[in-house]
Length: 254
Image (cartoon, rainbow, N blue to C red):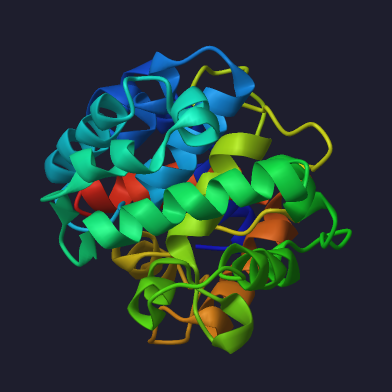
């Protein structure tokens, strides 16, 4: 297909899959349970952090995390006492365990008290059409407290060659407009043009079949290549095509 035909095809698929029904089987349903900005962004960040593997397992463990924080993640993080962290004993999602979660709670608390919240930390390091350096700066700040080195693997760094799929997905949730009731559009100080596609095995394979991506690995270089292709089709909202690429791969076995 010509690039114009690919764009038309993906525009149609993006419209199809970016709908409220998308929430039924996607981890983004968990932050949709909340109404306050802080509860939404904290729950979204934590759920996005564990968003690899079986989606049902991701959702179940995301719900469990919220339950352990009394379904008030912002209040829990800001006001918990040390003894309250004992309740996380035994929590595990793949390689993300209770110790990791306890550090994440501590780090998020630090970001809200010392850096004016999650949004501001990304805004401070954002570029006009790129948030990948902001993700790098976020990780550096996030792990600025004493922590186990192993916990660092749960926040990817695009400046070290990672596609940073989970945190790019989190940023899509926070920044893209909420007109279709999937993404939230909470962070108005950032713009969809700055976002990068959450590149995973599904979106990567579909992009290659369509000729939008040549690189075989799903890494930072592949993300830059895919971003360029998607921006050529819609510079203002390139990651709307995440719905098309993901939907084609997961639901249509494209």
